[in-house]
Image 1: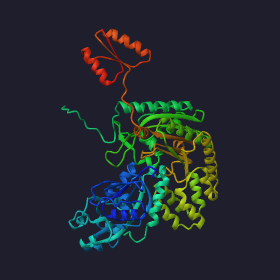
Image 2: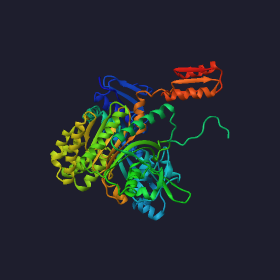
Image 3: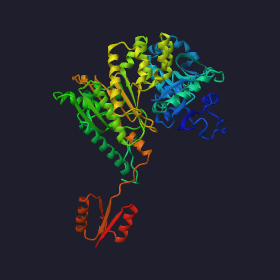
Image 4: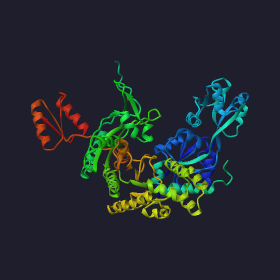
Length: 225
Length: 389
């Protein structure tokens, strides 16, 4: 490859498998990447791409700073971080939804929606891993509320009285069910996205557009979840 | 106070050590000399001003990043987040009786707040404002000068993307988007969210020709010929003027030797509702953020009660230095001569003579033995060492 290397940030975790099979099928990844997952940089000379393995939540940071030209990130992470990056393509994989959920036994308190609840009880505490998404949802609904940021196991909060509701990412809904929570509102859907640094998108436009095209051409062939 | 060699510094601000400070100063001096050769005069405005006086004129983008504080009299102040607003304030108040156009330039620090702890908060910019001219020639001047400044900066390869907000509006309107869809379209493009763009294009009721061209709009990069693909959509007079202006600007710039560096990208927006005509952004390989940005902002001065067309741009000094650093930072400055000896009067006189001959000279001010003074100077790499008896 005569052209300069493209640096491509891949997210560890649930999206990695999806990303890998898309990229391999699109002819953009030839070696199968390190199996034991300890190597963080993997160069594919043939494709002219250097792959980085990052924490999923860090992909937008690598992209915004230009440390990576391209990346794959969940729309959930993109929404939460509000970074200045380009979204090139919806990979239509790894779908999940931002939901508002409440304990099943309190469901009737929310029959009039969140606003009905607030009108009656006055306060609304929201436990979430996504304070920005939660805050902008409350704003958009004109609801007062307190955001309680947690790092995980958000489902606990309403069970022990830390919050009345949770806002969380839901894929199958099993975790909610197991903790006896029920969804009362959907905020937004989130799928995996191909993202790009805004300068790379303009300076290496042909390369990035060609990669996006190659990925698009193999999307929806059934191997993506 | 106990001090073990470290003190706390707030995140997002930094020291510049000699090599970098020298690099910055030389760059700034060259830029100011360039701006002066185009007839731009330097102005300096206060670091902080009344919030009330400046903030209402600022776009939402700056608003969200303002540093405010309350002074000892209880007045709300702001640290300037850019130089365009203070210069607009200056021109529309103290200089409003002056003949137009006026040309001003600056080199300064600005301050912007960010949600994230430790992010950069003090920035250095150099830029120009050309006030009181609405013509394509004025746009061409701003763009040409930005291009010259980037050439002069020594970063090597760079690109300037050029858009025109009226042309974009005209294209969106003419291609059949409803009014709310046009707003959503601009929103998607300004966030560079091509997924939202694609959805909008496929859900809007466009005819198939429009649909095809609109789907491709964000990928329409290239020379002036790309405008031919969209000019059929443009019927509103404002957009037609914009298109004619853009073509004229392109002609002037390509005549001035810019071609490879320049390309049209109609989806370039640089925030909403601030720029009113041509907008542009400069990029350098290996630097993840734009190194330059600017455009026409004809509405700003009227917010200070002085309607006046204006255009300009700012260069990011630290991003340009970052691009230069990729090519290697200069060595720390070393003087030409080192003078040591016992008779200080002699040394100072000798140094004065050398300096007036154009050399830089360092005098030994620590009373070291001669051998140690020589060792010091040679470690530092000073080429000429003179020891006076």
